[in-house]
Image 1 (cartoon, rainbow, N blue to C red):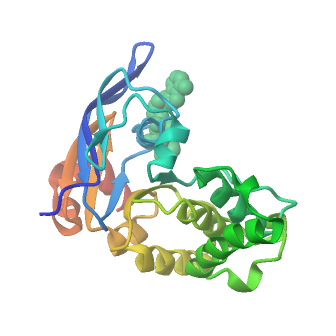
Image 2 (image 1 turned 135 degrees about the vertical axis):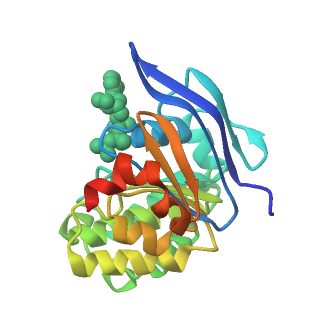
Image 3 (image 1 turned 180 degrees about the vertical axis):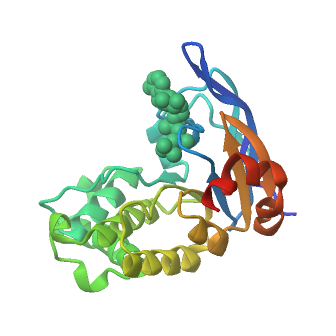
Length: 249
Ligand SMILES: Nc1ncnc2c1ncn2[C@@H]1O[C@H](COP(=O)(O)OP(=O)(O)OP(=O)(O)O)[C@@H](O)[C@H]1O
């Protein structure tokens, strides 16, 4: 098996007396879509925050592309190719879709762009930004202010912003939340198109989408991994059915 891109080793985090992440270990292979599911309050978002660098774990290690990134802040992890999208819309409403993505490209630039002439700067930013918009199906909407995009288009734009970082892995926090049926289907098709190219860790409540998309499903309950494996095996696991999927009927 290929060397995993992202490895969590015995990650733990408490808020006061509440253990929200309890010795979580998992690995995401290159190109794998790994879904993280669990009931409300299971600790999924807290786990994603620790991986992205927004929260510091109390214990454990996060390895990314073979390197221990646990001491790195969020910005440094993003520069190393660990991108994330947010559950809360994080675009700038007054800027166009293209400008939003171009800002992401600029953030990634490791050397000052002031060395280049203006037109050259624009092209250096806009070319990869257009490619990212194209990858999420938003080429036609490049010049629309982000605030005027539909909810589903905004979620796609957030993914384009993550792609602009040329990531090796993407953390996706509920990309289908609040998205209608038709746009949801488009989002599922988009995620499918990214499979194989990026390692993805997907937090999602929509079980139909999770089981349609995931190569691996990890189930978190009270901050602990109770099952992890291929979707068919996890779906049939009695502990999973009792703790979680049973609720879905
Ligand atoms: N900053 C915080 N301080 C104290 N408790 C917190 C904090 N953040 C989260 N919690 C608690 O940690 C637990 C896990 O929350 P988290 O948001 O990670 O769960 P989740 O699985 O993402 O839930 P959901 O599916 O509802 O988004 C909850 O009991 C929550 O109240």
